[in-house]
Length: 355
Image (cartoon, rainbow, N blue to C red; front, side, top):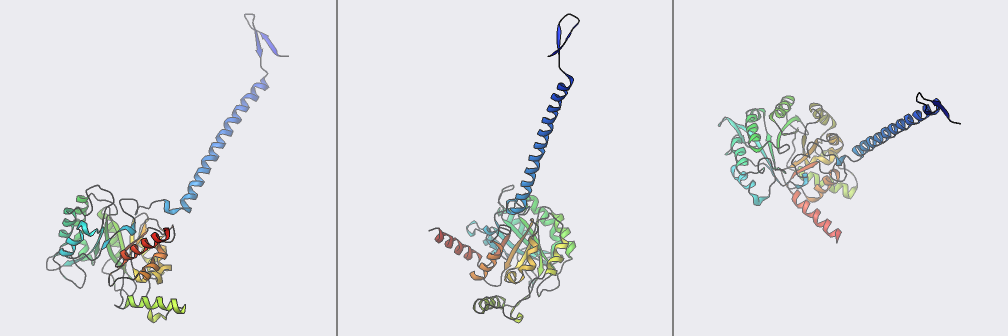
């Protein structure tokens, strides 16, 4: 029987028992609480999934180095040691299809300014100022603000050449728009395999280079080696193929070591785009030591070798180390004689497989 009571005007009012009213409010609170818990659960699930994808698929997250105006590293066509007016004039011709220029800078006592050249040269017909003006005038790096910039790598051979160049590079960046990743400032700041003592204070160079503006820091090690280095690499490969063993160390060149790599990494602040120039014939024998350089996503490698053209089997060995996994793919630039031939051979091979 329902409870009723009379009101002052003679009407009757239905009375809901207190316990039923409380139960209704309790059920409402439970529904709200359940909704909140479900919402929190799904948000947590999404966060866990995002973290899982971030860790398991690192290639899906673009690093600072690769996300701002650069092509894939394997798409660059390099011109090495562009240290004269003639070589520069040829390199910037559109018909040459050069997309990355590497040039060396020394200090000319005769001209009392930085000039393009590689030791033991002491002077040049091309100053750094003229070099940079030509890059601007020919629009080698595209129009101001354009994407997919070509690379200009400035390889400084001494502090005497670098310090008066800082203001010139700043002016150059202002004229070209300061595209991130398009201008590389390079020096060998630590002693490396068979290398001489560097002509730089490592910490000072890094600080000064980073203060220039939006440039890529390119820091490496001094290296040495005989002219027969390429031949020794071939002998090593043949010995391994036919005897399944390594030749004695007397036939080998000194590799990069874990101590060299640790010393370099200790100098570098996190989050800064850095590429490490590595002498290509030493990569395979040094890979265990060099691999930690790529633990940071903003780091890359630049393989170089200019003494002679590397043969396709040698490049194939390097390629299998650096381009066979998602973690490492597209994180190495190839400033190598013979690399264009290797890429052509790779494309032909892929075309045949498709047929």
